[in-house]
Image 1 (cartoon, rainbow, N blue to C red):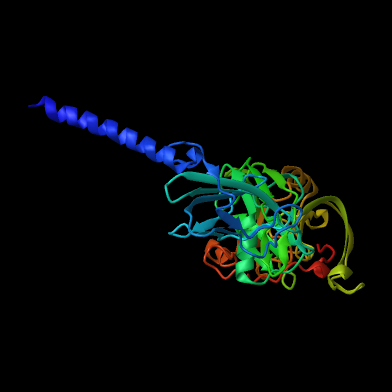
Image 2 (cartoon, rainbow, N blue to C red):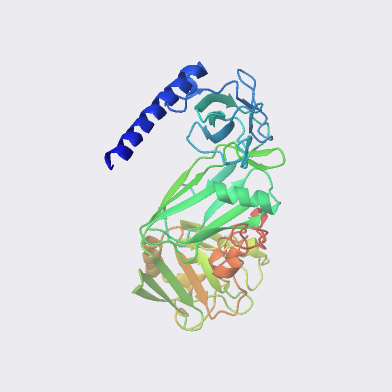
Length: 419
């Protein structure tokens, strides 16, 4: 009795195979059989709203793939550009329609691969290419500083060719501007104004790091009729972590490299009425010789405060004229009194040593001065005078408004040196 059920099972399976064969023979199209393994051409089953041939699609309109009639459904849609980037989209639960959920890029070529199945479960596919039209208005971006080696305090800048005011548009811009460092460092963009952004880490850049800045905005819609254009990438490196702290109260500057003191220098800072700005500043440039005149900072020629001096080993920290420089005329006051017109003065030998030790992007911090605080923007790089929570408020991606509250760069305020 145990043999009979087995016999009936085998027989049933045989009949099932024969039955399937009969169905396949009867349908007349073996290529569309579910078990054939070869997808049929679904050209007559789906339609796209993108033109074929030389015609170009409007990048402002979402891409749609629709199943025609009631013969089957769409099972998958993949859309990629020439670089292999995927266009995000959403497929309806019934497989009747797929639409893009991210904007198309302007002036781009896409490949669309559509998978389908008919009412019998047979798989189909269709692949086609199309191009989007280019745009007349591009948002161009220029990164700064120039490629090279900098100190760990050097911010990255991005100057835009057109103003961007809307928060959503600013978020698009920030997502497209990529900053990567090795070793890694947490950082964020800050909107200084409608056309300029600064990027800095939470802390200073790591010492001896490589920082790469790129853009993925090319062809991406930023705002109304405004699309990103091609952007030249930037790569910089950092050196050791050099920090100089000038204490106007003790009249000394302490210089450290990677946290270790390498020099302590007697200095003089700004006297009452000309007090040096407190706060963290970033070295902007170095000049072996500068002619410094009091008239350049509003001091009348011939007055008791007037001056016209040749100055050597000058390291600039603000555009309004603050330097760290050689001041041989005040050596007697260095280390004991503040007698300058705002600069940090030291002996010629010490100034030459400082000049040779630091580079653009290194940190100079002034403490215990009677002067005003260093502006975050507009007079050099005062970015580090904003704490991290405040900095993040200037980004459209990190919970802030993306509005920023800086004064913006003030080119007209680039005054000549002050001693």
